[in-house]
Length: 554
Image (cartoon, rainbow, N blue to C red; front, side, top):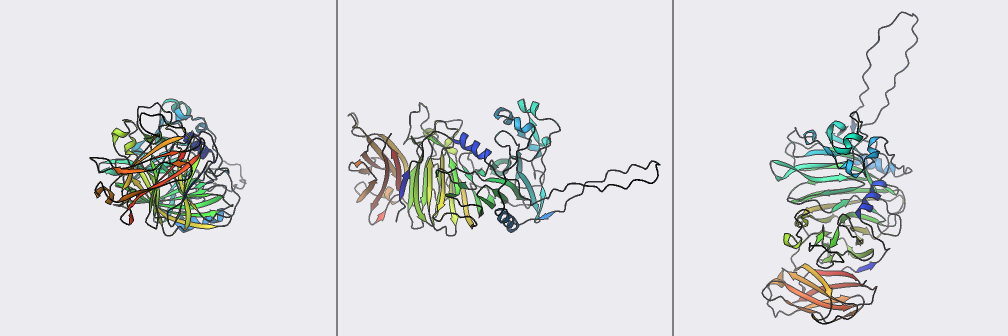
């Protein structure tokens, strides 16, 4: 059984990641977890009045008490976050001082000093750099280092940063940092003699990673709460991190994080292994403060401005501008469903139903520079990312949200898993999954012929006037058994349209190539939303991925 792809236009309007990132930055949650190193207020008892007026020697100032190290474990963190879920939510207090005056230009002129990287002199495979608080990232987070199961704070100060331009005038030399905005890890996973960025945690619960030879593109989040649901969206926040000091020779690192939000708390564990495909093993334990209408598990955030299937009204020399080009779902029944992304005229959603999915993700399938022609952004090098559930996730849907956008700076694509059962106050749940970041992560291409491109344009016959509401859809397939079949193979195209009128599909091999092409014309009323589905069958089997598409005729 294939998943039903249904759609809904939730509300109209144009906004993108600048808005989403700002909302996320401003909607962060409460103060950091009291694990790690407790803060003690130094207090001294008053000395009794001397009986003699003779001057007494002035004693040296007593050293401040050193707090006892605090044992740490994932279970301890989980217990504390579960207890916190029973308490009233407290929004984080924003620190006052010079960081509140940092705008975009000032913030981008602050850089972490590479020679201050943590673990740099330890022969470690990893080095840690911190992000300065300010601009969108006013809520500081705490970072602790774990050594032999004991947490100690990782202190950062103004001495760890280079202040240039406007920032040099705003940040005083004696600035006491209230915390950091996040961190990034570097590792020699591209070449043995160079420490390159591999993963970043910064802002709300956002994080992103790279595979070998990739440049940054799509992001992930710890959790999505009520995204495009008609209710106010929450942006849960990682308030505290604990990183296990990497053992000598270790090429993986374990990160723990405390998640807090108005409706829930959470304890997270990430085991990060850089490589050609960087892998994150994630455990998310969630504790509900309130009922949540829509919980989004393993959410992905990306950008699609224009492509072969949707050029919009853009006057751009580039053929494609996107971090990701399609959503993919691999089901436990053996089906593979691909949904090319759009930049829609209004906010729209698609829902792919599944039970215990094998994997899902947002992928960048086309890797040819000539198809993008952007020598600066290098969209052909953006990573794909696949979510591989570990264990049984039960019934639910992969929801895709597409937001109208007119700028490539806007993150306008969101995808996540929505469990069939809604989360209720007092619920406790755990999700285990594996994130694969890279050029060709597992699950991005299977054994069947795969969709290599989707083309959309005016319907009808070339050179003749097109009727109103008539659109042509062209889907090219390559690979698998289909690619080895002769031109006269006994195969057929199964095509479905949810509404409108469909002309007879034409399916054939492109002469002189291994590409097979499906062409179909569809007529729909103005304002209609049409769901399309197509797959190629023959010899008692499905020969291709199942192509899904959404057309809004506006």
